[in-house]
Figure (cartoon, rainbow, N blue to C red):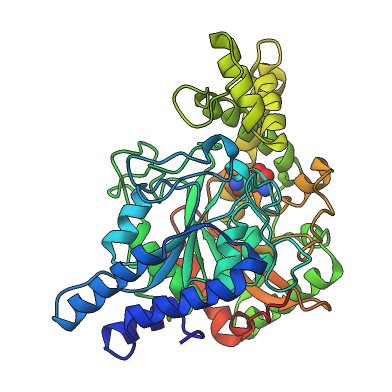
Length: 488
Ligand code: GLN
């Protein structure tokens, strides 16, 4: 049962071969065993999950119609609102915040009869690349517990890698689904901006944030997309389905993309560690063996992506995080003697170092006198990068490159050096700036048995093709089947 994908488990449950209660109990046994070492969860809901599982089993036994994820244990990153448990964003400022409503994606998971087992750890407010910025706990990489799981959705990817759920949701503002998926050896998809509702996702950089699946297989990512994709009138940036129809992402999954043209930028790939480069080159050979053609393309403004991202994202964050004022939400200082002190001391006491750094940077970038020089310029660069992708896709169906320049690094290795940490986002950020979808799939291991991910980027709203391309590789290889042996 432990080896099954979410889709296989769902089918077995529907066929009365396994009960959801059995599957959920087995997940909680693994949580009991591995969670003290891995630390993927901020909160788990054993009683609630088992009650939901029992309800699903009963409905299946009675021959009732059930949802697409009926009985499957899943996890949700703790920056998505739930009416059960707290929604902390791994921040002391929201440690005791209980949401009065569910995020749209949580409603959809519940509507699909998934069993939500817990809320996963993240970098505080999703700001980071290693989950070390969590204000609440440390998550480690199941493949090597002295290393980071990546971030910011490191709790979700570690939970899936360790078998402590069958699938999870993450959020990706600058790589936070794809990069930790790569470092933990699982599949992570960032959909097109606007494909999935952000209603109830705690905002970090609103023009970049997007929710997506973290899974063991590409088919599971397609299955989760079938559940979460679509327009939501409560999120005005979610796209009208008349403009870009949502499709059945599983329907054509097994049809290989014929005449596939893969775009690569050789100089970009050369920036990664040698073992990462080799794994990506080997993956391209697999595609060539399947009849794909590799064409050289250019993304001329790629080098400016990190600089532009850290202006746009921090500017938006400085505005989004203004709501944590000690009055509306979360932590309130006990030391204040007037209104201004309530605001400043509540924030000073409860925000972590990285969040403060970003609020200051973003406020500065937006201040009069600097707005034109920094924020506006970053927006122009963003436009150029978007144009680069549009042009590139005239020559190819997808672009392939590494996800992360290195495999999982040691805990503590980069945390005191924010610039080095920011540089680890080099390969993921451009897709967010351009709004295009990207996926990370397992494509090898380095000499230390640490997973390596391949990134595939497609044109906007082309998730169906993106998943088909990813699935072609998965069928030819067995990297995604490997599981970590957790010790510690
Ligand atoms: N690592 C990037 C950052 O630190 C991206 C984070 C994200 O996608 N949420 O901002």
